Image 1 (cartoon, protein in one colour):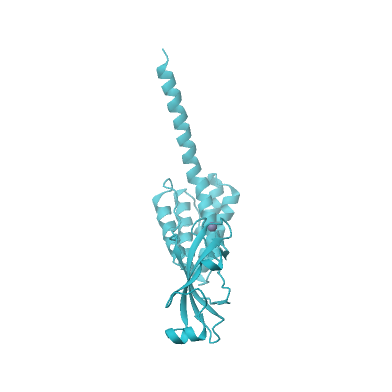
Image 2: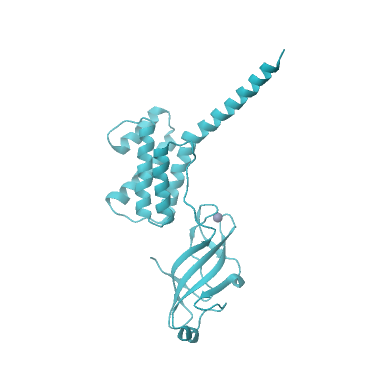
Length: 237
Ligand SMILES: [Zn+2]
């Protein structure tokens, strides 16, 4: 757990926005919306006297923050351990109180095996288990290659083979990114930042949208057009 320094004005560390799903910076809406809620409800930071009175140096602060990307509000709970001076301290943990952080999900037109692995990666991502998330996202890419009938020795060759199955070069490059992150997670035990994992999840989701969701939407529109034409033809004398 990385600890961040908090001063009297407070500091909101960057995080994953539950509304726009981007890893972004948050700003305090107004100091009026910042309150210490435990062990005592008060607006001012706990002084040395307060810390002695309540017998704890770690306080819970509730703040209303604004997302730097979508500008919507999130309620965060910060666990702060104050230093002896009663002015500075470290943010030990930031918990998102509202809205609930929900794992990413793929469209229902995506094959279940791919969706399940991706969903497992997404749950790991929300739980901040980034190494596990990287490994599961890689597994989702592997399953996607299988579904598209890609052949080759090892995942890298399989991803390359997608070009022969009508997948654009750009998407292939993105899928390699996911593979590399997964390899580093699995074999080298590297830890990744929330942002790196979020980037890869976005790349996979985008590739899957183009490969599965768009063709499905086009098919639905084609069917609707055909149904309209058929109805028109049937109505003719
Ligand atoms: Zn946002």
